Length: 57
Image (cartoon, rainbow, N blue to C red; front, side, top):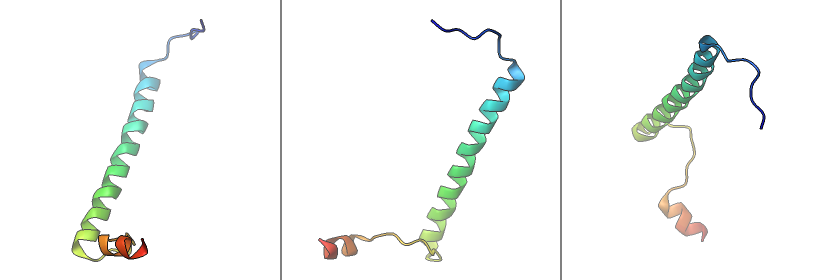
């Protein structure tokens, strides 16, 4: 079974985790912003409504 030759430093580990967490925070902010813009009606995002989906069927 393959094993790493040297122990990864805590700073490298923390840097990777910080990057991963930051990506999650950015995506959460985008989702929240999109949701707010849809609720206020100022959205340029096009999303299907229930009536449109029924009309297409």
